[in-house]
Amino acid sequence: MSSGTIDIDEFENADIDEFENADADEFENRNDTERIVLFLDDHDDRAWKAATIAERLGLDTDAVSAILSRLKERGLVRHKRPYWAITDDEERLQSAYRLHRYYETTDERLC
Image 1 (cartoon, helix red, strand yellow):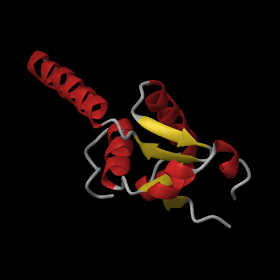
Image 2: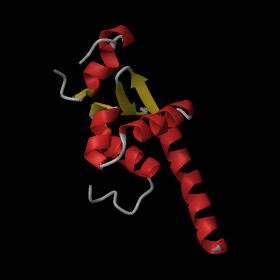
Image 3: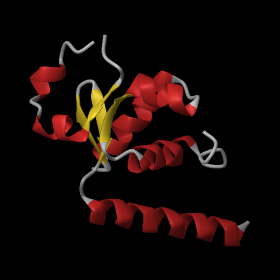
């Protein structure tokens, strides 16, 4: 049985087919998407199963899977079934964070 996580080097060097059959306090004030991104970024040396991320963050597995899919569409996470990892494109991640902070501070000023 798989532990729900693999080493990032193994993730990087794996073919998608390899994984086909493979068997929080600091995040408390964040929304679920932020919590997932921060978790993956803080643990960027590993690739994770959605269920393991959900368990570690106390979230619903289906919700985590949906969020991860949206993050993948935006190029913020990588996916090789069944594992997920933060993007290795630091510039893209930083741009997304700056945009997020802009909207967050704009919302705060308008409220």
